[in-house]
Length: 320
Image (tube, rainbow, N blue to C red):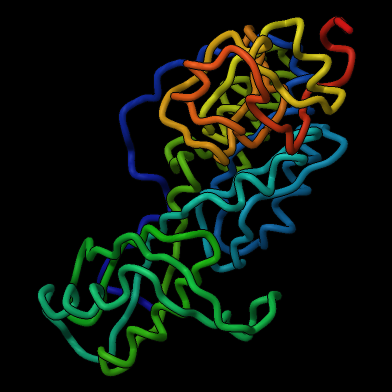
């Protein structure tokens, strides 16, 4: 169905991202391809479950997985984990999402009328997954942080939603229909997953071209620029470990205060944190046993309990 609003399937141009500085990015390419994320700009048509194996094949990785399934007709940001990074997918899947949706209402409406309806769905809402969903069809609570119209032409409304993971935009549109004399979703694009924005996503063709340059022309610069180290993708507060503590943590030990070199501020007890080496390598994900303020004051005691270890055993010397 045609629409009077042109919905672009490509990311809106944004200022260039500053070069990333990470020890992980200096590692051999094959090692990076077995431990990083790559952000795909999924086109409309193929399913997420079709796109992910394609990326795996292009990268030559032994395994892959994606965070947050997109329906075939939905485009946009699809984080794909390669190799060992698949261990961390659950932490990315729970991140907030942003979408841009093109909706056609049953009648022409003003911006004021649209905003008056949107405000009803901001905050905590209750949704039942649509019939086509693979999850149980039970009502569930979800948070919508904002809904704002971007463009309105007669009965076509282009709007942006920032919401909790697991929110169904198709269901939101169905709920809008109660107030708009009917409504249907014409197009949907995911524009962010957590801190990952669409200007950091790449088409399948671009990924294929980058891998060809690396394999055939020995030019790794393009594919390296596309790979995101695991700690950067997760965007968690960081605790930097001393070298002597790393192997013990990799073996499952709690992290104690003497093993901490420095840490970010602003996190609370019970928060998820990324444990990293002095070189910036991800050791694992842990649950903080102290707030950042308590950690600054205390010189002993358990600081964090590891939940998922990412670094391979033996990367650092055993010190016990």
